Length: 123
Image (spheres, helix red, strand yellow):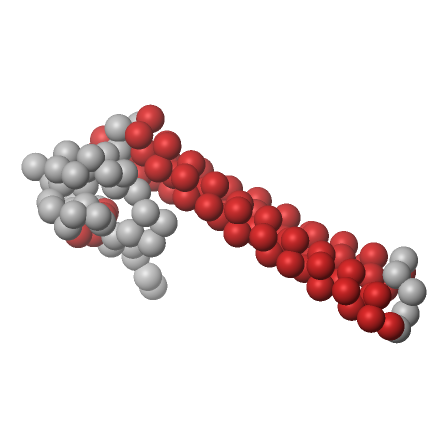
């Protein structure tokens, strides 16, 4: 079966990376749950409350979908900002460029390089 790649990071940096990743994943899961719940409620409300036919139903539906999309975009923006703040709090920063080392799709644990400046952070 599949085995995860062995981390090249020292244990203290790896534990910080995992702590940030777990928090990030919980926040994204909550955001996705909110997205699907709000879309489900939107469809339920559109079917039961808003009268059938006409442009009014489509306008309401489209307006709510746009509002949900904007809220989801803002939620993703805040999650990324929170990841950077958590990196600062845990001192998971690049010693060269002083930028947060955590990125959701980053492979710092495999490469040992900063995702921003590409310099090695492993001693």
